Image (cartoon, rainbow, N blue to C red; front, side, top):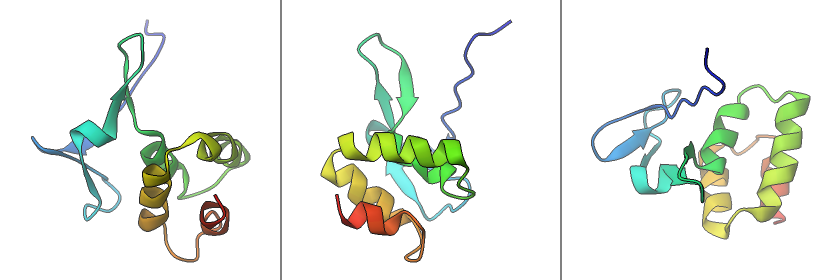
Length: 95
């Protein structure tokens, strides 16, 4: 059995493409990061984008925990990809 299941998502040879809105595409270098231990993972702002569709309490907790430590360009990216009326927009604007 497996201990961890990691899905990165769709894309082409150059870009990660958000499967829920294919107009959102990010270079693989920006989309897939690597931990100090060598484990690849989806960039936090992109993971939050997936969680933003139907915000559950645990998704809100993830948002509140992650956004304060995100680089400004990643916060801007998430804000750009979310609808203007999304509940997270106000918090993103104030960071």
